[in-house]
Length: 473
Ligand code: GLN
Image (tube, rainbow, N blue to C red; front, side, top):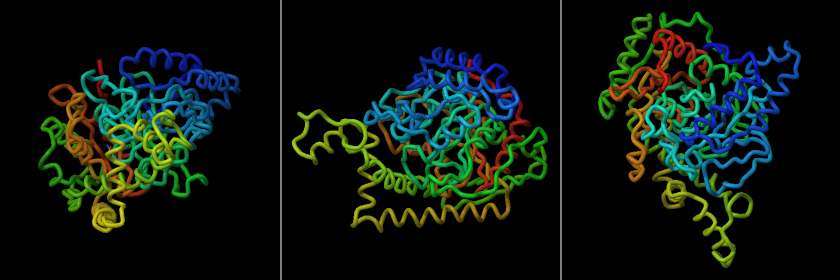
């Protein structure tokens, strides 16, 4: 397995090794369900193929873990929620079908914040995930299980979903690569919806090129998701990617406050590395970035309140015991109160409020207007630069329990990631250093819509210039 080609030489051996490594990683609580049977059947089918056919598959035999808010047929799919504790998906998500077709072997469903709402994985109904770099720290969220499993080396790659940073922020906290594609690049069919205008599925991997190969396998239009786009395919960079002439925009004002010193130092070092490799640095302004967090939490909760209305104790999931209700209304209320955790309930309440007749104009419509302004800021910046560089998160991995009692503090962890979702842009987190405590820092690069070719080339060239990155001991 090289930095570019992920494919193992012996498929069944690689599958068994991944299943063993996943069992060994159980103290991390990163996995909710292992898919041994499906994995062994896929491996056997691959081994039965003529070698030439198998070699034609871009991910032949590559073990992959899937965030548990993505449906896999016949497999328990919980989205980290008690309300879906016993839900078995009746179909494969499009991304799962495409991974199968590419020869990947699905080995596990990973722990995540409930309905992908969170930045620390502490909102999972199945307990928090531990960061492999320091077990008393969060792996980030909401795709914390996927990030921890890749960082621990149990699987080479995993899928996450990113509504406001949930691929990039855990990648940053765990010292791996996380890629959120352009909105519309990857089908959301079979992804349990959180904020439908923000959600994208994407890869988490050790290297940029590996993430690129996984994205290539899952991307492309899908008749079952009308928001997918017939965009030109992108290229995964070869070994010749370099930084020569790359124009990197740096929003200096954004970095001026609220960023940990250790993060700032690593980012400055990454920018110096890019400069030394032949890139040019340009100061840019993103004047509306200060409003990104409130805008995101209005749009995301509004959409969540509508999307989560389907969990009613009738069509999906948990229903309260008959002794807990007397009529249809109280059955809904009891089932939802028992099934949803505190953060999900908070967001349904907030989302319902901002969509209500009296407050729609003041909050929801206003948020949509600011969303447009945030998107325009990026359009203006991209007139002069190829990519925008900033930290993925203002801190490194914080301690489990540190922010869980203070939701507003937790929301600030997303300050650098939500803009890419509000504007639909592709963005990637690449490990760029360790802070004084020895915890990984992520560099985030953002590119114009459907600019994955540029994004991956810039990120891979930076990664080459950076050199090997340590793994947790
Ligand atoms: N942390 C953000 C939230 O809680 C982002 C979550 C995500 O990207 N799924 O909404």
